[in-house]
Length: 615
Image (tube, rainbow, N blue to C red; front, side, top):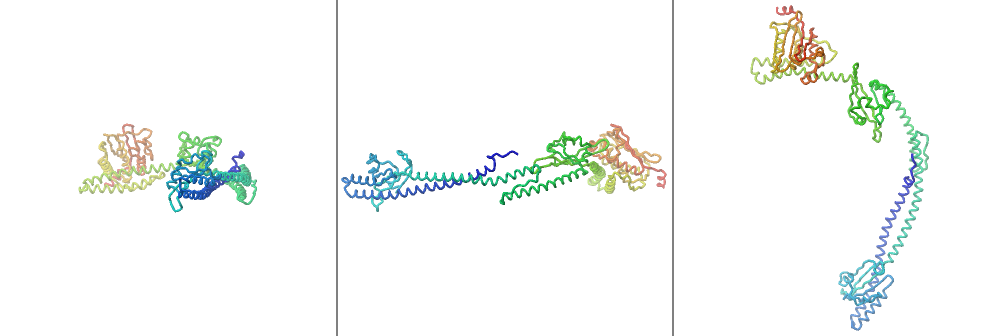
């Protein structure tokens, strides 16, 4: 740490503050005092001069009154001489000139050496205002043109007598005020000298006082440097019991607590390192440049890297996200990133959450990334999404049928006593079947379920199949035609009607979805020795050869975009397969791209049981 120069030190600043405060105080006091003193001196001078002038005016007034009562022609000149004598006696060092002006604005006497103005008209504005009675007395300050002195000019009127307001003349006086300003200069010099002495004494005291403050502070500075180096053994010297001394004691106490805190921090650091090392989640820490400085074993295992390869590796490079992300964007990232590290042998999906390491100043000092293995969660979530989609798919068909029958009833079919009960019966049946269907789908969503409780009964499959086709024929599009290759003879099969209905609904719904305009769907029943074979054939887009054997897998869809557009879920045929297998039958498909698909399924059939049923 560089040494602080004298002019930047607190020592210098402390002294300067003291000196400036004293200078400011002295200036304020001096300006106020000098101004008030100047005003007081001027007022005293003015008052003193006014009294003397009043006496002068009285004497002149007496002389002019006596002159008026006598013969002016004979004694006028004598009276002027008397007035000249009076004003000559009045003149002092302060009074530079005295003039007496009569009511005719004529100068009748002056104390000036220059007597040429006697007998001439005066032009002084102050005198003229006094003669006309505008002002009883008047005074003003200016610089005398001849002497260059600062003077005060005063005028006073001369009354005819004490009991009359008639003005018979005026006295014009020019008095020097240099004495007043001389006294002010002396006082200013005294103030300047006092200010200088005060500044010197203040500077000396400031230096002494600053040393008492800066010396302990310098010692504390050295202590802080030692603390930064990790030396906690040094102590600050206590110079007194004042605030500085208390600060030194507090500093020593702080040193002890820092030493304890450092030891505690080291212990917590070791604990944290142990916790991070034994966490099941991965943890990665970086420096302020984004370079990896810490990584635990779970993170190494998830990312399949070794510690030796992580020197100076950036976190975006380690996570494989350097193309679309930067270190700054990861700091601002509010949401977790989902990264797929799956291989052909093993799936692996990782969620990464980021948290910035901030100093107390708010500056970013690094980044913490926590890695969670969510492979199993994603698998369960995917199955949940597919299950919900499947429920929507499976419920659509019975709901559509119900809507068709209800619309027919709303359009007037309820008036037909034969059709209305049938429609209502179908609607009720579909509602109940839908409830059972939801229960089955909830059970079927569990991947480990392979057995079903079947409610079997002998059903005439021929009539049953025709009713299923009739129901679809009411809701199908007009551009698709149905062809039935169904025996007229009854075929009694021991089966669960709801389950087989669900199988046929799924198969026929798919056939209608993928049938082109003008296409046809063919329904056939083949009687085999131990079973009957049901076929549903469409003229749709067909299925690629490599996908034919997979269409009965759960959640499998050949063309996801097209299936999603048409409302498919990839679960319908899987449900059909489980239902047929539960009945002891089999299900498969044959398809050719561009020519259509045929879905086959079989159900156990025993003609002998049928004969017993007929009997």
